[in-house]
Length: 428
Ligand SMILES: Cc1cc2nc3c(=O)[nH]c(=O)nc-3n(C[C@H](O)[C@H](O)[C@H](O)COP(=O)(O)OP(=O)(O)OC[C@H]3O[C@@H](n4cnc5c(N)ncnc54)[C@H](O)[C@@H]3O)c2cc1C
Image (tube, rainbow, N blue to C red; front, side, top):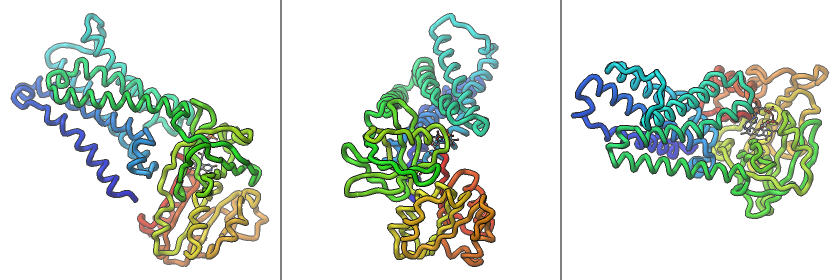
């Protein structure tokens, strides 16, 4: 989905590097080995900053998703650029070191004697912060809990600010090429604008305000919340999710809009109390104002144009993106495989049972007395209901990360073409 938009974005990113490459002066920059090393240092500094700038902008959800609503794809691009863009930035100090070493100066000895040293220090600090964020995000992410990781991640604001400041003050190319300097000032302005925008978002001021109208316990740990818009409502498409914020400057968490009423603009979120934030929602008083941002994502959109039989595979609360799609497509033959621990974890089954042309296969992993399917969703189980030719189906998979990786893995192994497997992990 949105293939052309994605290609345009990637091309735009590549194009944004052109002014940097045009700034090279072959006569001066390539004259001696030292000047060549210095050129490499400057180029990689500028290219690395440009990558960081894009990576930062991709993190501003509302901005990018105006153009590409598939936030999961945007987020993956953001992660990819963070992981590998760091190498580009790293090349800058490496070549700077080699250049100065070549002319007999050791820049590793710290000194603070003049303005140049100060701006150099600012760049070093920006780089050190970036290295720390990169280490925790790209290398140690799986070993760090979500909240500390997220807080560390915010340091990237300081890092990019310091790196831009460093470049504008002592970057040779930026101080000798007026066109490139104007370009950099524009990038810096956009960065400042984005920071202000993020601050206003965190305050809740520029998000949609909704009021909690009702809450109903669906199971022992899943509650359905109905939120009523205070002003103009969002119009989430089926399968899309929003970010929910309860307090000004508080945490924001993604939840799928499981139901939407276009007449009133009311949205329903079916939320499993799994950790501090989702559990705390149970105590929200009716009438409480919350801040909602979105809607994002493109999951299940392909189901609306598919000519194949639809297979939905949900792990626990991963059922939420499917409610609207199942209701919207009464004519399409559909089958739902739904993994839960016990029958007590199954929510809103009556609603699903009313859906025409829908076969439901419950798979319970922790109820040995259950007379239906037990254990986990396996390829044998899928073939028992779907037959051996799985290529006749389009698969939509949603659930917790481990279940998702396993299920998508077995589908691929069974030869289902990748373009017939659509998935959404409940973890960004
Ligand atoms: C696209 C999407 C749609 C979702 N839809 C639903 C839904 O309809 N119903 C439902 O019950 N759950 C849904 N979730 C999961 C829900 O967002 C998490 O369970 C919740 O944020 C966990 O926060 P916590 O404090 O309760 O638990 P924690 O124990 O703190 O978090 C558990 C895990 O959730 C993830 N997580 C935590 N905070 C965030 C955050 N701010 N942003 C992104 N991921 C986070 C992390 O991987 C973390 O390890 C969805 C998640 C995503 C990504």
